[in-house]
Length: 261
Image (cartoon, rainbow, N blue to C red; front, side, top):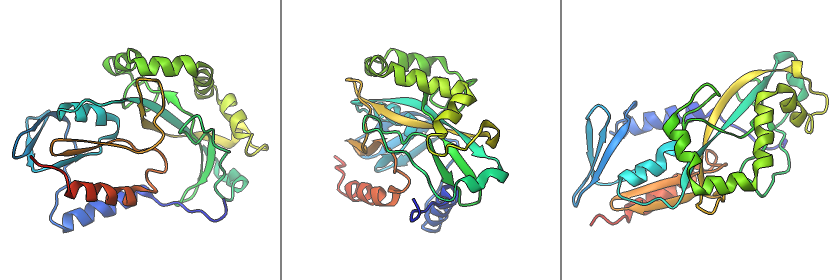
């Protein structure tokens, strides 16, 4: 892909934070929502430290917790968020010349995942991956992170069970690539045949908030619902970051017309 480009999204978010603050807004971190009361005249959002934010309307972009936030706000989500971890390797510096551009496989239309690919990063380096394995916690960035209630909620969800029965071979292959570096290398060699295991070192991981329907389908488009005084973004698949400003504009337009009675 010789004519595409990437950005440092952490810097994009930092710039957005600065613009919000310059406009008189506040950015509050480490605010774990425990209760939402959507009353006739306002929304009250209370966190685990018993702090409460009062507002006229709200937008829920909580990602891995978005379905739970919707439920707290009085809605009934038609999907459940299932966490899938994506793991990466980095090319060692002396082998970065193997990848001069972005290299992607032909996508599988059955899945909203891109498959393993190569990305030249804006600050240098080449990222290889990701795979897609079920995370054992909604914030499970490695195999050691385990949250019993999160995993139980996933495993008892009928939609996930249908998905697992349908694609168990694919899921087993993803787990195999996660646990065995040689299997991961084999997948990468379909794009760069000369790559070797010694060319790779462990990289970062991310957790995808994937909406799954009760019928066991992976939602492959943006999914936005509303409740009284609130808009809820329940699914934001790739290219979510690329499309974020345009999608944000659409949400803002809907926000302006949101019913408050």
